[in-house]
Image (cartoon, rainbow, N blue to C red; front, side, top):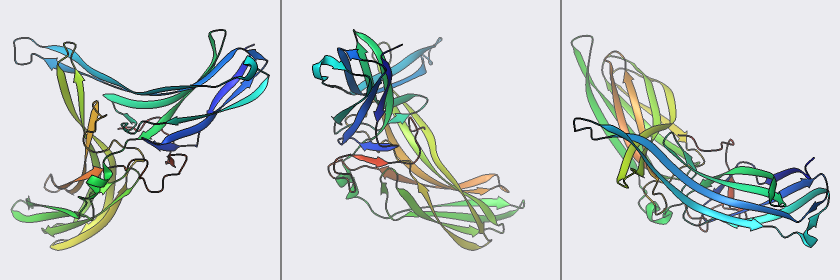
Length: 331
């Protein structure tokens, strides 16, 4: 029977840590028997990786697929705990740890093309053998130059109008207006907006949906070290609104979408060479009788203030509770 019964990392449940903040917790090591010359430590690790296949030489008589990839190491810190007299008795032992996160880290992220992940790993070694270890993944929220972006916050409104035909020869227009009081939001915030539907047709409009999209840009290299980029789009949130836009009337809808607690910040930061993100709110009016849709698109900015200036940040914890307990934020 092993001398180690269990090892466990203790942290606040479902915590979200800002880049630049601190992570405090403790490791509980439970032993079945006395352990001599143990090495007990905890590591903080952050890494990223992207990979995809693309076609090379498509304009020639032949083509081939090449793998494009890229990787980054964001943080690797180790804290080894002192053990008095180089032995531990049977029972439970608690070791406190404290890590300071680097100030410029990208957010926890995962998609079919790549991922950025962070974890704590506690281990106990004896006689150069690993007797027990545990890995706990973290939710890290990246930060941005929030104050500069915040200065450009302002009401934002877009309008689109489309001519439609129905009942063979009847014609009309549908006007869609999307209005936001501000266009900069933080992860976990509620995005509230107002939609106006000007229905200048003889048909009733009932189907309206709202969706938030992430427009992602990945950077990688071929085996020959040639730089490649890949664009991808993913729907983060969707909501359908029950409405009755009567013929030749204007209908107003007030709605909102709740952002996930962890998101890549908008734009391209110094430490986001693997993936960058832009966000777009799209309102869609469906016209099934004309097999058409009317869409209004509004770009929004996702920003997060640095840890030393974030309002409401716990003074010594650096964590915020977030709903759910995903290992990664999924896209």
